[in-house]
Amino acid sequence: MSKTIQMTVLKERVSVQQIRETDYISITDIARYQEPGRTDHVIQNWMRNRNTIEFLGIWEQLNNPDFKPLEFEGFKNRSGLNSFVLTPKQWIEQTGAIGILSKRGRYGGTFAHKDIAFEFVSWVSVEFKLYMIKEFQRLKEDEQTQLGWDIRRNLAKINYRIHTDAVQTHLIPAELTPRQIGQVYASEADVLNMALFGMTARVWRDANPGEKGNVRDQANAAQLVCLANLESLNAMLIKEDVPQSERLKKLNSVAIEQMRILANDVGLKRLKG
Image (tube, rainbow, N blue to C red; front, side, top):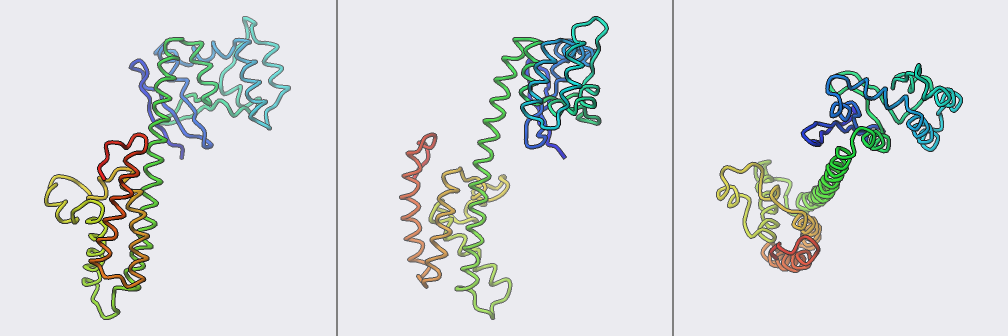
């Protein structure tokens, strides 16, 4: 199932779908800016243009090994004639095109690869095109930011598994009850919380009664990177039988050092060590 997100361009909602790991933009939504009740008419007028046919054909030849060039030549030869009509469905079915898609359902309409969509919006409105480019760039920047955060968050989760495995192997005797085991896990988690955040999970919850999640869910990217490093280091210290009080001092020292380094990185200068 493709993922659909929305852009707002000059008060018009424009859908973007991830199809084949590529962005496809709704040209039906773009056409609505020109003629709200006749979007199919707008798209067909664009597709009957000879320059459009040539552009679509060249794009398919560059990106689609299964494109049918003979059918394309037939459309190109008839383009420009008063009697010539071409719909997205006809183009797709007769040439095997992949740059344009017709979809049904809630998020249906005609979608085009971003290269083609930007060519279409140039024909519809230069003003709309400029605003759409700006909004599309913002959308991609937001995606990259979220991707970076997710990578760091997942890294912290992976290292946390390493850390809890070390707790199970070296700190938890077999005769402990499940409740006692949970208490040891919580204790070790709070060693990391104290080293990095200066408070336990309970202290944070008491200070933030209306907040969801925990102190780690409020961490920024730099803190998540540091937390991942602390989890690995603590796992190693546990294996070496270093007492908890000594580990806390070492982890706190490492956290201060690493956060000072990260605070000097671009975009992180306001972070405290």
